[in-house]
Image 1 (cartoon, helix red, strand yellow):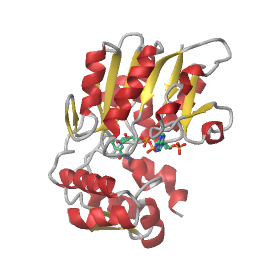
Image 2 (cartoon, protein in one colour):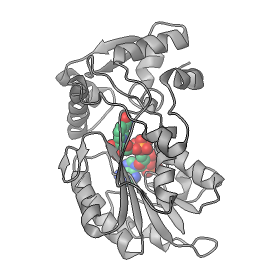
Image 3 (cartoon, helix red, strand yellow):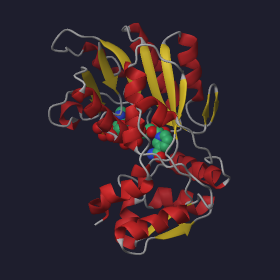
Image 4 (cartoon, protein in one colour):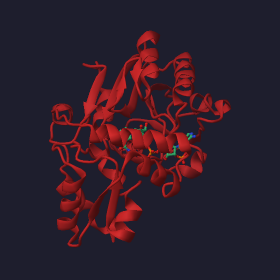
Length: 288
Ligand SMILES: NC(=O)c1ccc[n+]([C@@H]2O[C@H](COP(=O)([O-])OP(=O)(O)OC[C@H]3O[C@@H](n4cnc5c(N)ncnc54)[C@H](OP(=O)(O)O)[C@@H]3O)[C@@H](O)[C@H]2O)c1
């Protein structure tokens, strides 16, 4: 069997691909750039959520030993209108013989509800396919690969509307390890895992830890929801609906909606999740 990784060049799939490669499990990445987007030694197929004519392409891929795609790691597009596209693609995947779907989504997703891909979750349930939903909290890598990288490097600041809400920040390495398990274990023990890091931290505490680890002052700037939406749009160039969505997620965090921990990563992988201090040490060079 082979595994399809959508969002194939993104933060979690990059780690997941390496785990599959090390385990000698055939896999295929998707990228809007096709093979040109693939890291060396890996294969990718052209796939664009905004172009439904690309949805069949992964299933036409010829694997060296004639394997076919039996499982999909599903990452939707960063769009307020992602769910119908994902549902359409899941239908095509099942038609082509896919037996298991592992969907990465955010904390606020509920089956048939919440503010993420709840209708996709419901569709997976109704379709009869084996599935697992990974509800992850905020990624540590948002500080190295996304919204906070530039401001840490250039201004020594992180900005958000997360206020004093505590977050169990999680590393993408841990999300990928849980995804690997959910995609490859013979019998899935659960259809839903919350993927969380080991400790609850406010953004002030995050800034303190960064300051200590980097040996220079990193300041946490607390924004209102409106200021954050403006920043997402102007600084991170997010389209307006995404900017509003991200600001809303941050304000929910300020309302203590992320304040939970669990032992999922340790139970599934046999090792504790990465701490933020370890993450800072590993990534020191990224922030310059
Ligand atoms: N960041 C967080 O804190 C956080 C927290 C909880 C949940 N999540 C969830 O995590 C998911 C994102 O996962 P990730 O961080 O691993 O991915 P990612 O780093 O955001 O990258 C996803 C990849 O998708 C591809 N892509 C972008 N637009 C596309 C389109 N229109 N069609 C097809 N491919 C497209 C891009 O690759 P190409 O340019 O090569 O096409 C990109 O590398 C989202 O569903 C998000 O809700 C994130």
